[in-house]
Length: 382
Image 1 (cartoon, one colour):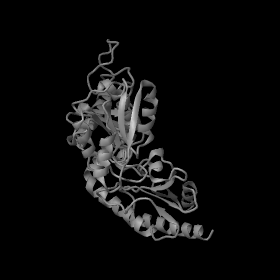
Image 2 (cartoon, helix red, strand yellow):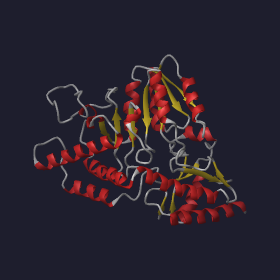
Image 3 (cartoon, helix red, strand yellow):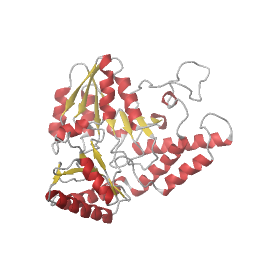
């Protein structure tokens, strides 16, 4: 199987990640809940992972790194806290449902939002579109770092600066960027939400919420934290405030090795390699009859390694099913991001999405081009 669905979750995972998860399951105990050696050992690995993530993302302190079940959980926590008492937010035209659905849910609390158009290749216009959406009751700018459908990068640093110029909170959805392109809290982000099981090669069921020192969101859930147990009130100390219930210890143990893998390989090296694969694919399929591409040729400055396309007169799901017959796994449809599809005119058909990883080979891309050439010729003969 040629796996090209790494925007959903990376596969394969590094062997060290698999080993760490296995060892955690074999020697599992609840970290931070007991005084015996197994629990203490697990707690140390959780702490080590927190420190590693803090270093990787430039967090001010390790306790500003919060472990969650998913990037979606992190975004819900951040969004529903910042807008708990109503107000207005500005989002991009490329947002995932992990941003849009919480905002829709908050409408009954008086929350409204405006959508700023992303102009591909023109960051000045994009930033200006965000600026025009800001009003007197705006509380936050919330946006994806990179589109999970089209790979388009947003000028996150500039949008963060814009938010702060107006006294707003900036929340970054880094689901498609963490581990793929450089990302640091030193750039001024207030809250970064990440999906380690993607670009950080960690297990599924893991998420991160990284907080700057200037924000203190409310909790989404409360419960046992292993600390201050006598009090009926949720502790304010970080990270306990946000980590009620048993942590996903095997996932966190695997996350340590996933982040270590990316550090060893180097983000820039991984990004350049994956973009080279996507460029190779783009150059080949743009010449095929009936293939429809929706963005300019990807480059390292403006894109993450994600490419969407269609074959004329075929629904994206049909193309994906045909590719599966060639042993190629891709994702088709709306990718949980109807806003992005509406923005680029693909809401009716969806798109076929290809996303490589550090483990994808040039031979994998060549085989994919061969399969698409066969499919495009067949489509042209209809």
